[in-house]
Length: 355
Image (tube, rainbow, N blue to C red; front, side):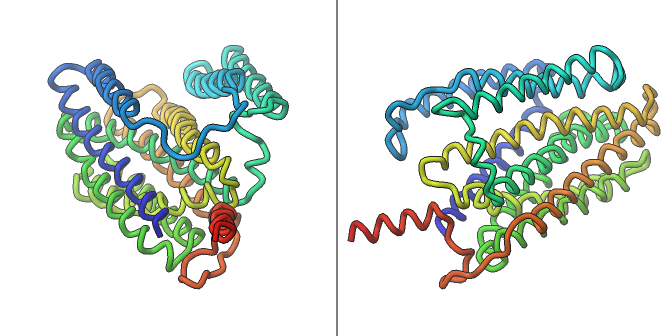
């Protein structure tokens, strides 16, 4: 229960940050131009660094002899960056162009080198064996697909509101608030529902609702759309489903993980979210560009955005299916919640030994 509450708070904090970000981004764009959206991150990061310095060490002591896997970090960053770049450039240069093939080939080579380094280094950034656990693998696959759809959808909903419906930047920021409210509501509901439904069912339900909401976005992305039917309705349905996923997703990502690798598992989940968002946006932009064919009329743009939404809905449906198929069925503990993970079991054994 404590972990579920903590993960719920984490999800709600992200949703609150999203609400402030989209609203402030619209206001800043109207008042000071789009560059202000980039510059505002400087004081935010400065505050975060100052807060981290005041907090000090938290949790377990560092492992003696552990070293930063700098080679792995550079290879993973370079490989994923080139992969995103290759996907984005494919919409302009074509999939068979020398630039696209060279960029994607270099990405594959760097990522293969990353795997080779992680198999040999004594302190890997990511131990490959961590992904052998079905809950961890499924959680990261689910997060990758979820972020691919969500990040791309944010981008295209913003474009649809401004270029098709004629909203200003500030109005578009306010129009995103229902989405953020739905994520908060879903996160709160998930903290109470995870014990009753279990991780597998809750992730399946959440992913399905999110896919239906994204499909609603696709069907309603027309030239004569309205805020009520094209923005508000699909936003609430999609965001509620996404909010339901945060708590079980974080729990699954650390299930059957030994205590010394929970940080690695958590970092992997965050990486899946960021990489998924970048890759998803690159793919959806390519899809929309292929449909519009360079046309800039409202009808062509709405058709391109609708195509991107349909692909995003498919990604969310795939995430829900992956959760249903890959996650193991859950037994019930005495308290009615999912059976304890190896991490919890290890802690219980430690308590028993102490007594």
